[in-house]
Length: 240
Image 1 (cartoon, rainbow, N blue to C red):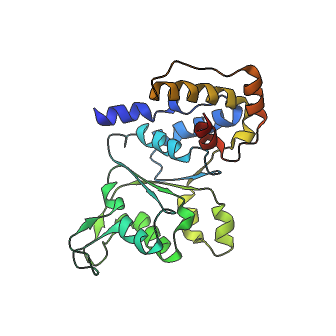
Image 2: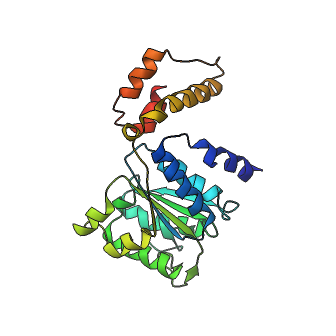
Image 3: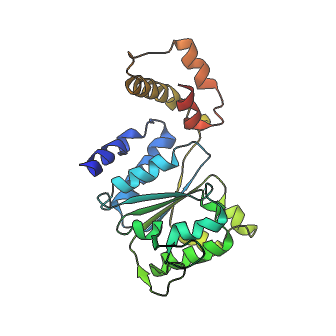
């Protein structure tokens, strides 16, 4: 029941937009979800909804009944990223008092979503590349090969191809992740969707706070439609 509710919460219907840019992207998202593509790369500015698209791909796929496991690579120090991804055995290092199962293993059968993957250090990138190519890995401090079946969705607000050319990101990992690349347009490239998003979040926030439905005057909608929205959908939602 919980998975069914989450599938409804993160369905394609929750992605708001009727602009040509969004319609083209959603057509691709639907095809990707229905396919057996093992790697998907989401690129776009911060706040464009990459996490929502990742969840829509997962819950719209045959993996939807299996786990969706996310990790924000920018939110953890480099020293912890590897143990979070792959886990560790008891005694692998000081204070490792018990075995820890990593995110990669927790996502078995489902989807592993790596947000801001451009923040991974080169050493962790190499181990991650090996894991997704061979579908096996070892926990830190362990020797046993653990087999996993996951779809990897990676996201970045940085241009990974440019980073790869500059030596800041492994080119082999970029090409392995870039099986299908989806670009999420910023709001300034889809102004016709802003009124829809305003209405969507007005209704949503009114429900969340048990308030009567509210609306904006045409003048305010026009002002917001012409606004630059540097923080994209996240900024619009937080403003509402």
